[in-house]
Image (cartoon, rainbow, N blue to C red):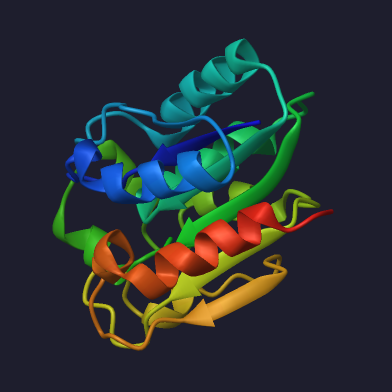
Length: 185
């Protein structure tokens, strides 16, 4: 089983090395998918690229997405596919958009605005993968913070620290992610 980790917009992919190592030691192969997270590429295009990468990896698979990375994962899995995704984790992902996205006129930011055509399409699709979602009430990037709560998630954790980047360094969140991914179906 391989796990893929996706960072969010403007993040340094290597900052996920601690979680990647922890997943690899506990579950099996884990890689950080380095993609164009500059905001200049549409989430639809990024999702198509991830879908190809997941097909090439074979299965079974787990996926972990932070912030925008969670939306890229959801887009990759929105279209009919035969990807053997076992579990998904979304860390502070703006499932219903973020008002903060209005601050930048980039393709990915426009798609992350509340009520965008992209989010409408994304939220209309079915989802049947066991999913953990984390959120932060006072998130300054996913605004409002509850946008990261997702009704399709089977498990939801509210982050106790009011910081968007908390999942990057939080030992407690990393432990919850590993525990969720280890659970049997």
